[in-house]
Image 1 (cartoon, rainbow, N blue to C red):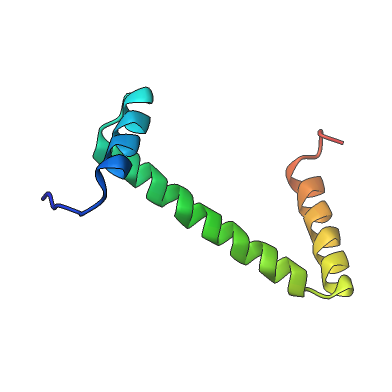
Image 2: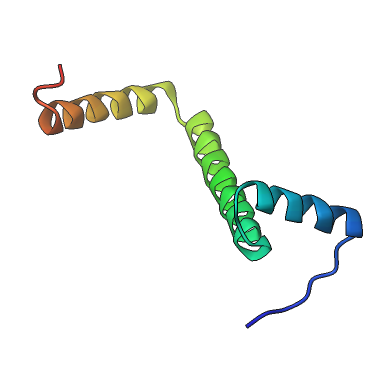
Length: 77
């Protein structure tokens, strides 16, 4: 299914140029932009959660992560 969206001619031309540089259709380029925005928002949510975490919570997380790495990657250390 296709649909129309209203954007200025300048924006349409910018998006088409960006898509062409990467060998993508305009639809594929827009999907990639939407995916990037979803990822940006997820990472921002993680950053906010980490900022709200107490110092002792961060220490507990670091200790648990180190233990998982030790168990999963025994030859890496």
